[in-house]
Length: 159
Length: 333
Image 1 (cartoon, chains in turn yellow, purple):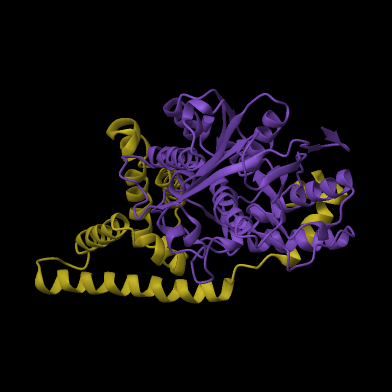
Image 2: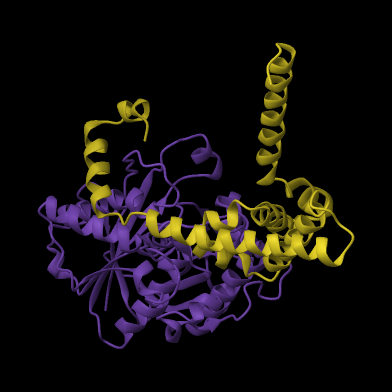
């Protein structure tokens, strides 16, 4: 918690929070990191395998194989979400399933499934990007800033 | 009759003539599955939304309780109920089905005992012959409203709790046999400034301690008066904190009589992190398991302290802290 927030708390509240903290189980950060590394690594290896397959058996180059690879991973992730398996894998894997493209597919698919009961327009359409929306908004914005930076550097005779 | 600052003593000792508990698939695999009247294998209960499924749970709990009491719904003067949905739709829609005069309550997960305390007050003041008190929650509808979509893959910390899919109901009567509601302590809102919705146990524990202390102070009782004191849904984390806090305040409750509905309801190996939560937690455990134990004469006197976290999905996004509340009801055989 930030210091600014702590200042607003009364003495009793601070005392209680410090006391409660001693009795709360901590997130097992190191174990979580290892699990994330393992599962995230497995997902990336599957992706690498798919890419290799698209280059070897289909008419794709190293550059163009990216698109079908991502499409297949998204399909698998969305299916696992729909079958109700993905959230259980994620409880174990944490960031391992959240960071790769599969995590993004899961945020969109889970929100779409969840809000099906409110209809296609207000439910599915309106809520599909409830979680993914901020990733898209800030992703596009940071790409814009980086591009501006790159153009300015170029104009100044850099790289 | 008011005794002390915030405790009602019910002179006429209204009887809980019948009670019911209805649960979902996760509860069916839980530790108390033998104490439910109906258990569903499908979290949708054959409905097309989670919200409708929750309403169905509550309707069934009410029907079973009325049936077991051997009365008709026309004999029930008032229906008091609460749940966690926005604008308490589960309770209100159930009241629409029942057609019984209705008081909708919101005390978050403490609604179960808030309803029971008020129902007892109605009977005790001769304002009703029979009153129906109920509460419900549904894991998926609560996750959807307060957290993330059900199928979203987020890793929950060990302090998180699992919302119970279940509903409990009880019929209170002026006449009749059964465990009797003898006193109730209405809690204050206590806020210790915690704001993590994945750690409700710590946020609610001080409220539970405040109400427990008030109860013993107002009635001039010792904890040993009871065979069992159960908090509503503090879970493993919050319950431990509450027990330690009580020791700090010189009001130690012997560990063998101090328990929590959120710990009792599930088995150790179920992936519920710190335990169960939700209105349905204290409602199904009390109206199912604990009252059954009383009827089997395993317990003579018990105190249920239902705890609630009074947050809204918006309030925590706006970084407001989580206020807690707890209501205690004493039930004696």
